[in-house]
Length: 271
Image 1 (tube, rainbow, N blue to C red):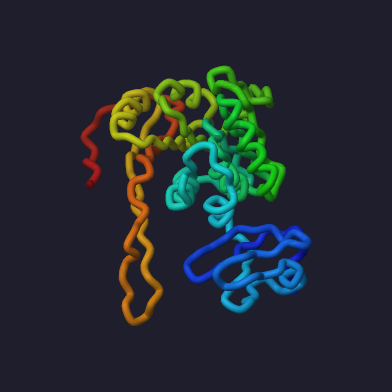
Image 2 (image 1 turned 30 degrees about the vertical axis):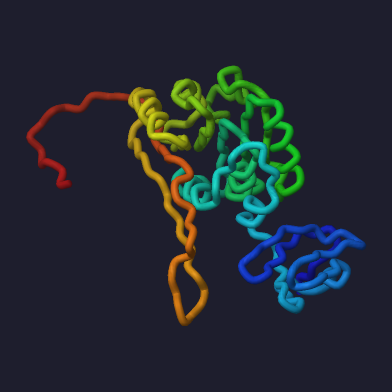
């Protein structure tokens, strides 16, 4: 049986509130449900109820929402999990992240690609880079994250592989003016790889789209709205507040080669 141990991170649930805590010796959790000494938690199985408190192993969503120290606006889980699916990444993938921010998405990317994959994350601002490093060192599960405090235009992959092995399976860009970096990102991606972007305003979408017309195809723009529901069986209805617009997401795929086709009288593809 897996049990909670001293210095483990746990998530304490009290009604509709969640708190990420570390089981430090001699400390307790103080809340409206009473005092919960951490020494009484250690040794109990994950998923134990103490009075009105429930204690679980943290999910990556819990870590992102309640653990990561924010120097910048984080990418919310509703966007982050969708981003990972659109990037088409999995175990063993090599992912480029431009704009580490506070490191929230970096942690999720690290978990998705696993110990056989790698995440190379670039952050130009030193203050954000240092904060992200602290968050990542605190919460990461695998040493598969490589952080760089550098302008992406000056970045070159550490592996000099003429065969293209140093290029990335996917990239995600979270910077103020992404259209300035699309050419550089193109040069770092494998053919057909997915690149994703997030920007907060429609004007930034308009400025980014023309930069994607050269070198990328299958361009998409979207946003994700997320609404929780009350868990009262007698009156199931939406929560009074919802997470609405947090950013516009853009996705595209690298065009490696352009070739002409022979015109003919073949059947027209159905739409």
